[in-house]
Image (cartoon, rainbow, N blue to C red; front, side, top):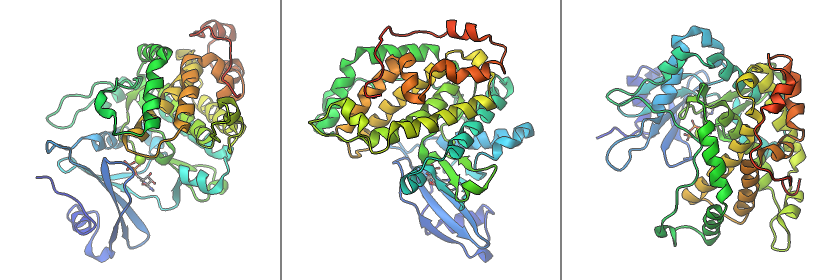
Length: 411
Ligand SMILES: Nc1ncnc2c1ncn2[C@@H]1O[C@H](COP(=O)(O)OP(=O)(O)O)[C@@H](O)[C@H]1O
Ligand SMILES: [Mg+2]
């Protein structure tokens, strides 16, 4: 029987783990669940110290998943290899991991806010923030790129279990069975039907999966809930942002992390679409309450900061920009599926997003302009002189996947 944490027993648990004492005047509260996977408790201690205590839920057969193990392993990697010290600054310190009960304790960063909430409440998209995210990610990928000792370390398995297989995120939606009828809204069924009708999507995902080359440490879940921004971001020169929730981190594909971020920004635009039966997709895209141009500037600042921190990646991934666009399309589709699975509200915007995502996946070269607002060669040109790669070569090596001349509609 696994010990279950609650706001009643968490303080005693922390005292036994030597993370606080009876003089700390600790108080605990449960945070609303963001997913069905784990419970989060916030414990406030004397002297403005706050801890976030997380416990993974048990799954049916009395087992608990071991996702926290990966975050713990990442933390151990930073301890084991002091040369990675600067990476610790972009994350949040892990203080304790209890493998048996799957409990993880993190330092809670009270001065930071979730980036999604920041955008929702301020409705501004400062380039300083996306620049900070791009350089933090570039630093992480560059510092770990092709380093066998880090790769082997990250392949450590929890006690008594097998080593992790590399996880290839380029996966489509599994074929749906008839028991889905009645469980999901009609609009969601339309989404599945349309997805299955677009054969080109499956082809593009298969190609993305085949091209997948794990080469550095990746976060693998860079949505806007897992990025924190400092409350005084406009007065700081560094540590503007922190990347949290490293439960999915692994040896992986850099374009996937970038694609996930791009999908988050495109998602802000797409979720602000005006949907009406009298409007075409093109009209809806143009009438979005948050215009694409605003998000394009943020996405461009992000990729430019990333490439400034890690220009060498262009020597190894000549098709990086197009792969990023494809992964962004894939993540948009995966996000819709997650929304349906978790029973969140689903409406026809999901259908519109699928159509945009399809273009990103199947026509990446044409879609670069839509995503970044400038062409692929304009993006990489300033960094070409920082790498050994001649510009002409780079153009030749761009893989043209589909011979479709049309640009993404509405853009
Ligand atoms: N170290 C931290 N400092 C401040 N806020 C945090 C920290 N860790 C998590 N949070 C907040 O708690 C939320 C849930 O934490 P997270 O680790 O992402 O768990 P989940 O697995 O539930 O997504 C985050 O989205 C963020 O708002
Ligand atoms: Mg999270």
